[in-house]
Image (cartoon, rainbow, N blue to C red; front, top):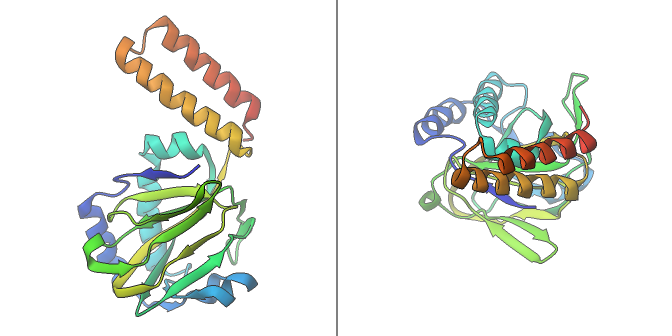
Length: 227
């Protein structure tokens, strides 16, 4: 399931975040790569333990906690602290798959990567190329969203970042361990949640059918969720 989540950050929030991270020191992106990714990756990143990355990551995590669409789609149990990447001058990340388990260096924090997220932090007209291309059941889909918008997709999918041929592509990326491990169950819960919201808009939250459907949703979540 690939889902675009608009307006995770406002334009003012993106501007303030960019001012903080652009002035920080960026390093070779392969510092966080596994063996396979190191062969495919050419970009720069903020060191994950840098003050700028921690501060900017906290802003993103706070914003995610206020996003009903993200919570409904991901049902997050754990979120890896956001990382930050920069691509320019032909930089790219060839086709790869994310590691199944992500470990934060120097800590005992780890998670199973069920979902991957890319939060775009550059205006669309400021760079060419840089699409996130995700291979799925129905072929490859190229994603390039406005600054402040995010895409959520399965960590198990093959994906790549196309070469940036003009300007600079800046984004945050991170992984989510969902309370619901099974991707099909998670998709069914998301679609049920969206349907309930649609019915509630027509009938009101106090409608008996809405209440019954909400009960079904939570009973299924109880059955499938790990906490």
